[in-house]
Length: 487
Ligand code: GBH
Image (cartoon, rainbow, N blue to C red):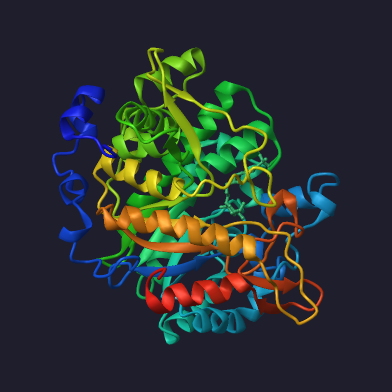
């Protein structure tokens, strides 16, 4: 069965040379496993594959008023009655700000090669811009030192949704000034940490904070803007990314690598036949048009602009140039599949809704479709010729309980991870250039509007005592890392 398409097919489909990069190394290296010397044994990953885990500042740190941190939109939102499950806030969270050394020991016990954390912008610039707060930077400097002392490579995200409230008060992501303030902040952090941090990601999941925060109102800042305004917010998000890339390159040490962590819509062909695969590729490009696609191609697709019509964002050619800045790597967060089928419509594809019976994890949105971990990096690398991809998040919520013997038997999370990693292995074996994988999350934490009831950790956290307990999934992941594979 044909499970990839040729360069000629791409050219025919999309026409433009911009998206049929002459390199297309991925295609050339998508060869039968026997030709791929990097993966020596079945179910083993290439030597040096980076096994990691991820967290985000507001979800784990706590200490929201410490060492000069300014308020973020999530402090405001979570303290607004009725906005979060049980009224939960990130005031204390995992108290990671004080317990980071203990948490690095959890990572070490797992055998992690890398750890992805985010910097809280309001710790560095309490007002969003202006005078930096050195005590804020000190925390991340201590964390980075602790990681390196334990042989764990730091991967640093610069924005994981905790926008300084002072900027929101001036329009937040509705204002272009926020994109510029982000670039200034990103350059500052890169300047000060790039002596030890070699990988930076600009923004985490633009799709989430734009659509859920500014359109649906279920995340901070809780706005329900009109389509035109949301399109402008989305443009400012990708612009912040682009200006951020430029600022990092201008201020970081040479050799610093810059990328992004985006939750691309993970299109999966309903059946792996050529027609559905081609449809999935078209859908991948169009349903990510306002995010990953404009970043990879430096232009909005015709269909995106046509669909927006009078609501299209305002932008300049310079904006697009910044947005399309070449990246050293692309991070993709992958949780659920979006099934796609071929269709006779002009678009050539149709999105297939999930049947009510489709299996999901504790979070009802988290449909369990492991092939997403195969198709998303594969389509991204083939569409845009990306040479270095990381799965910057993948994981699952489970209704974990501490058993009387003190263990947490999260067999469903183990099943989830095993089946997803099997698909990731399939991609890597075929030559899709995935270089690392970050499990979400190292430990249970503040799951945004869902509060503390939804646990994504591979370590169980007792939020009364802050005790961490490795779950069955942590033991499973440790075994995967130790053997660099699944079998
Ligand atoms: C990631 O989002 C985030 O980066 C991370 O911070 C988070 O903890 C983790 O995943 C687990 O959720 O309320 O029904 O509209 C994953 C993508 C997008 C999934 C928003 C949840 C909200 C579902 N998320 N979505 S709903």
